Length: 181
Image 1 (spheres, rainbow, N blue to C red):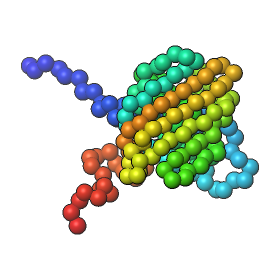
Image 2: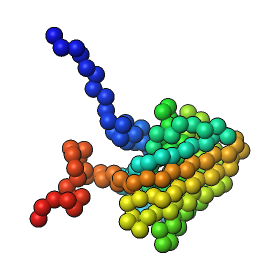
Image 3: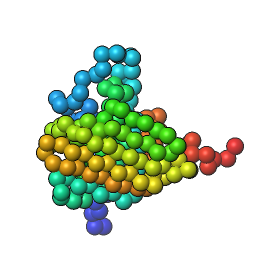
């Protein structure tokens, strides 16, 4: 009888699963911000998730925590935007509502830092992301937040992968432009 083998999910699938779990917990957490009064009927829209695949460093209150990946997330239902760092055990979201995008330089004004285990901390800070001309590469991401519980930082760079809600994870994307006509 052959030896029994354990099948492990690929690391990218594990990161996606962790990012989705964090997104759900943040979206429905008791500390999540209420939806704006000017309801635009976008409640049923799915979150947009963009993975940044490359090196990252997460610093929480002066302590460096191993970072396994970063996701940029937009939540239409509550008008929030996050850069979420996924560690081996949990995730930290650098969150805000006000952003600006000019010439490949994206900035998000931060008003909170969230972690499912620790809760939500009011924050002041900013994330600045420089996107490459190819629009598929993050040259740099730098998030800095100050809270009543200390300072938080996230740096990252890498290639961009957009999560498509209609895409079944069954192999290469149909819309990647690599197919024959």
